[in-house]
Length: 231
Image (cartoon, rainbow, N blue to C red; front, top):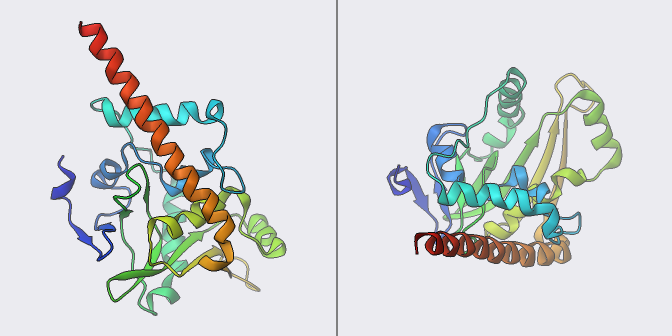
């Protein structure tokens, strides 16, 4: 499948919005070989720095395999809980939709070629992505803990922060926890502004550049070894 045949829009800054359904064949194709928000926790520490290479080697190998090996299966089974979570996320974001936010399938930035992101909702203003929303629908006790802690859970911080790097014009990211069974506080929002996270984002951007270099080295070494075997 030629990805250029997949419907897409290109922003003025080069960011590409791929208009596909999340979970579709095209969506999985676009994600091949890329580090996405949902797996970013496997690569980055809590302060945005890169984990030790001994820790991330297996995760890097998976990305490289998707790039250089034909017919690697990158799909996943959609469980009942996952389907229910998707339905709840749609319900959880209705108020954002009323304010002009939209769902998109996948977003890439050619400046960060080994990264991609599937936001739950974005707000586009003057052909620029200005606001991104990440929605989680946890169990009731987890939702309560998010409210009590008043901070983005550590496991999700790289995922929530990554759009600030990939979407250069982004001003705001909202992390929403949603539990319809909690009648007191069904929706809990944490809003992040780029300037408030400058130190973390500096670390994260350096890490993203470093890991891209590591992936390049992996691919080069594998190709060189393959060439030697041919000789």
